[in-house]
Amino acid sequence: MKLEKIISKTKNKEKKSELKQLYNRMEQQELAAKRKDKHEMLEKEWKKTEQDKIKAGKKPYFMKKSEKKALFEAEYQKELNETGKMQKYLTRKSKKMAAKEKRKNEWSTKDL
Image (cartoon, rainbow, N blue to C red; front, side):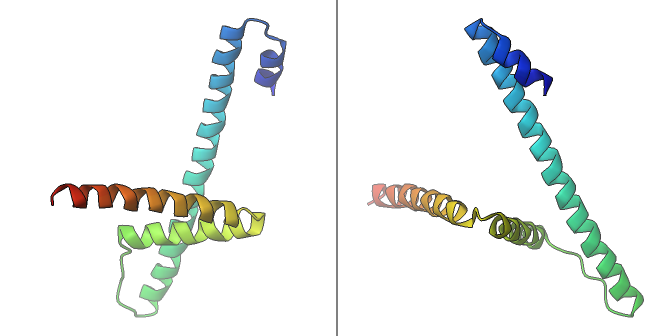
């Protein structure tokens, strides 16, 4: 990419750090757009199957936010399994939950 070449050629440290931040932001925006497209695609597929069920005579069912979140999470975990990054994801998630639990316990003991 052009920005990578510009970053490598730049001598000024301040300018270089600004360009690196810009590059990282652009990459993050690209990843977010891909993730959003994937979520929309999953939701469209689910709605299409639901429409087929309605045409077959079933009662309409509208997915709750929590169910959508679970669907997206399952798809994400499937993707992680395919790429082999599941173990790292699980360790990060367990650390996050442990910290959350610790904060919760701190608050519960202060009231005593």
